[in-house]
Image 1 (cartoon, helix red, strand yellow):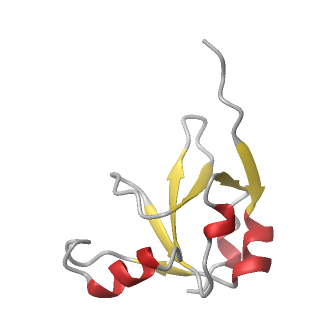
Image 2 (cartoon, rainbow, N blue to C red; image 1 turned 180 degrees about the vertical axis):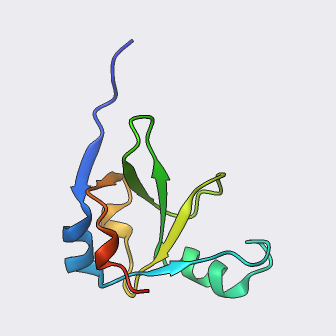
Length: 95
């Protein structure tokens, strides 16, 4: 079994290109949240997950998983869609 060639991008470079994100907390069902659905259509959502080794990484798009965290960016993340976002620096996220 071969390992997949996964492209990675540093979180700081994503912020340079797409702006400073804000944390999104889903208080209702994602399907019923019209604001969230608009952000998903505009490709401005990043899902942050924890790897098996314990470090955080991001994926562009809304991936509903237990323990996942979500960031909303001011600009589209489409150019980073097929990349694993590494080096998450929480101090760069708006509170």
